[in-house]
Amino acid sequence: MHLELASPTAEDTRAIGAAFAPLLRARDVIALTGDLGAGKTTLVQGIAGALGYDGAVTSPTFTLVREYRTPTLPLVHADVYRLDRVQDALDLGLDETAEDGVLIVEWGDAVDALLPGDRLVVELSVPGEDEVRKIALRSEGTTWQTRWERLEQAVDSWREAA
Image (cartoon, rainbow, N blue to C red):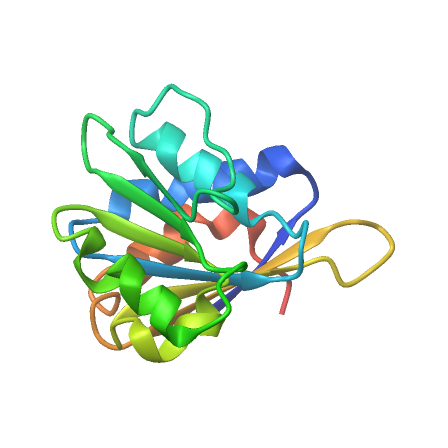
């Protein structure tokens, strides 16, 4: 299952995150991939805001992990960009980090083998000079199969023309 979205502004990127946030449930894993500055943290801002978090959501590049307690679902936001070794990622305990909430991993492709097979992969890119972000959503495993139609509906206004 795969969706291609267009996000002309940072506000659209936040809105896309907010649109699918209500579909999230405990133990979900989202792997974010893409170039620096493509909007990974901006997407997380939209997700956290939609889950009821009203504080600042910033990149955990230097802290590695930030936890946002929302009224609906705890959100663990990890960034593995600065990790040099697989052991460093293992030491973070990502597999245990969000047992009662959602784990979102920036640069998730770098620790692909350490993440559960069931996950939502979100790839963000800025392919052209017009600065319109492309956001590709892909389901791996089975956890999103029952929610995929609702996900498609939630983000329909940003879908790329076929």
